[in-house]
Image (cartoon, rainbow, N blue to C red; front, side, top):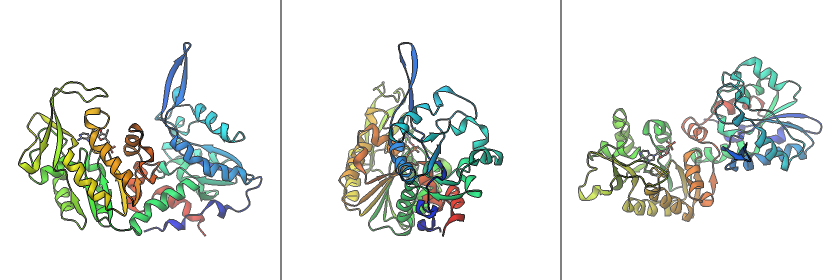
Length: 389
Ligand code: AMP
């Protein structure tokens, strides 16, 4: 497995004065289109990733480099889409660093996601060095991520280095007790990371949609909850792994006439306690962990020296099923150990709950953080290692 410290750093690039540096950042933030006086205006939502990207850009410009930054934004699928234009991001960055050049959205060109060599050559034209600071896309073999290091002396940016150091430390040198909290929709999408973490964690607390396949594997009736039949054996294997895997003892379920919404829309909501022999009735779907489970999980989290959390405990988008995720966020906030939250929906849940400060470290990458923990390395990091000292 790769050592995080083997990545080339910004300092390894040497004297930056007058050098042209091409930076791949992950400036992909939510954009909303609003109408003012009949005109459409694109506004930046959560600017967390932009703020996290500044350290590298400041370092390079303050050391005399001429910086061009590039990123994707949204999913334009290889064609120009006005609401995916990088313009609002450029304005935001130039408020802090007026001299910075910001390229238009990389994914307006289909060659970016196809990792086309001629696109790489266009990107690097006239540049002296390359810096990858885009942790959130370093699991992708896209032209702007893996291409430039083939031709230009390259380094990892500040954010990329911090993300990799923080996450890989959990794999290579975790302090104990190490508690992993996993939720989200599907067990199939988290199986790889769960298997990898089950080798190093002391306890794994399971919530979210994936919990119901575990509950079914233990013989509980799960009604119409999310269920992945072909993953039952994997759940049984995990329940017998080195880590102690804990699953909910009670849940909140809703009858199928109810609608999952940002408002409360219909349906009968019931609490189901498996410990007293209840099952989720047919026609009901489990959508959150229950009070007793949050209390048990809170005790485990309180004793942790290291916590990694990925995935909400329930359908937090609907206020009726937000309780479990909120309680776990509070437990993480109160934990005296070092707490790390994987990006994606877990970071979004924290932002929606106004609890961004709950963890010591919030990763900017969802898929990337899970793949790094599963495989111990990423294509974007491998590409940089050619320039390691
Ligand atoms: P992920 O991207 O895998 O972390 O999944 C996040 C999504 O999982 C969120 O949109 C949640 O609404 C959804 N989710 C959480 N708990 C459940 C559940 N019990 N049933 C269905 N979906 C769920």
